[in-house]
Length: 240
Image 1: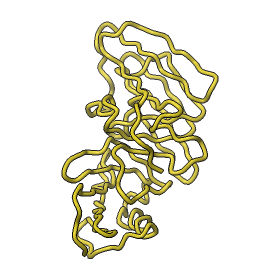
Image 2: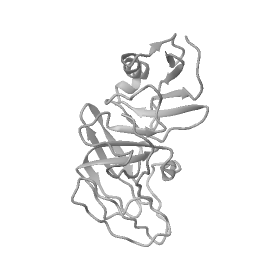
Image 3: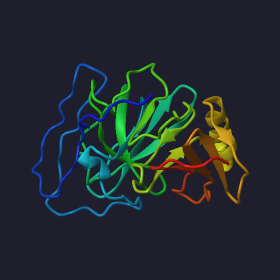
């Protein structure tokens, strides 16, 4: 399910911010207020990409119910697991630079994600009635901006990083450990169900066409932090 571009409500932690408090809400979404120590913390290994979601024009998010919440400290990362029916539980890193150590949230949330190693990194919460927020029970429980044209990601997968935008837009997805070993089979089946035709496979890739639209599925290296991906050109393409 793809929605129009709307402002994304994010929580960005800036190094020079003064401490603030967490404001719990009566709904399932709790906004995390900012809090940063005077001296910049040194997080444990989990590498953050630039906060592309801060522009609200390029972002990826996933929704679900929170479990296994571990708080950050001023020097160490925390984490939580996002659960949605039909999708492998998705572990997400919380970093001290973006999360108040006293903050918590639970129940059903939609979270913006940045690329991370070994897990995607929390980049903010999607507010209800905005494009990143997908009501509970609506699937797929994941979204990206820009979104691919003519293809909806299956519920078994989730976007895990803002797409790389250019002549060919590039999306990274997590479909679970086993399915990630066969992206052409996993994503290929979903593409064919949505009217795409497969072309001859190449080493580690497969090309799909629907009219003048083209998508190329690329296998993951299976290295930590690497995921299956698919690309789509912004211009019309010829057939197989």
